[in-house]
Amino acid sequence: MKTESQPDELLLRLRLPDFDMVKIKVIQEKSSQTGFISVAELMELQKAGFRRPRDVPQEPTPKSPRILRGRERQRMFQGEPRSVL
Image (tube, rainbow, N blue to C red; front, side):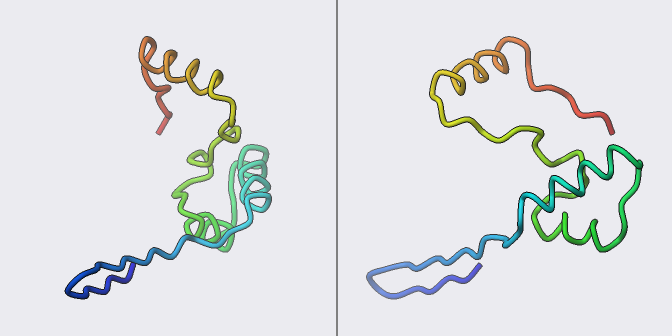
């Protein structure tokens, strides 16, 4: 993150992680099948912003507002699904 300050403006730049979601999904699938991943694969996960293979979302976020509202209601009444540590 880089910030620059001027008397009449504030500039904030964020660098987003550069990763390929297909590779991340392959690593997650390998982890679920074999039970382990290599250090290089773990580093690639961490570079993408995920600590463990199970932190990768199972399904992409839908663009339909109806589906998003349904998931919000489900979380409101049933709570967040708990991850197993």
